[in-house]
Length: 288
Image (cartoon, rainbow, N blue to C red; front, side):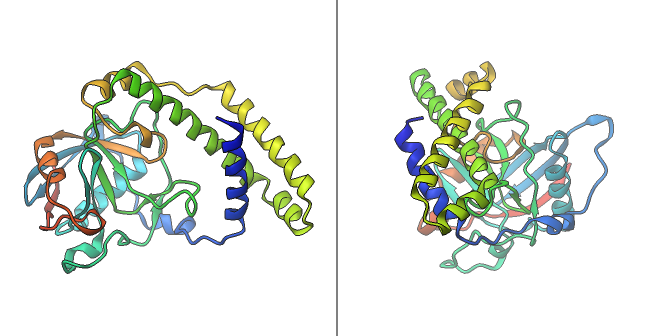
């Protein structure tokens, strides 16, 4: 990562730290009722009956909080009638906004949820954003540094196929993103020092702290250099996906049947805020 880029990030992050953020965390997550693990370690399958056909997803046992919450919402009928409110071709299709069930054609969607979030459950690199991956949506890092997932909104990856050279460039970009993550964490850990320096208008002290955090970031990143596994490389260069989302959003399942339906959805005409101009909805979600 270039030094000038990190320095720009430093100042941006310093500014962000002085802003307040509202994020549903803590005890709100306890509203997601616990469900007993599946027997014999078998994965739970859920069928999403949509207005364009059926999609079957399998939920990973290694992400138990996301699995149990998804099962809970399916059993409650939460997903019955929700729209695919955000569709971006060669990227993903998103749904799970409870407010979309009764939304008019010009209603802005994307904020509806059950009122709680779920702690991130990254099982990376075993589970990644290959084509067909099922992952949880969430709010941005600026207001959600822990990357907690939405209580209900999720997306299915469509993505694109990458050439080997293109994937190498993407890998470098993701390595830089990892450095940003380390740096943001260090800034958070040093928040009191930063605020004290800002209050005293100690520019020399701020510069010294910047250099210190840069060195710590580079040292930590060097201990575990970012690379892609052979499985990731094979997937992204054959079936495709969205590698830049890896390690950023919780992947908690995958499509095992109905990717042709997913493709039908990703190819519909969309309008404002990437919402389909003709509603595409989940008619019924059921446990198989």
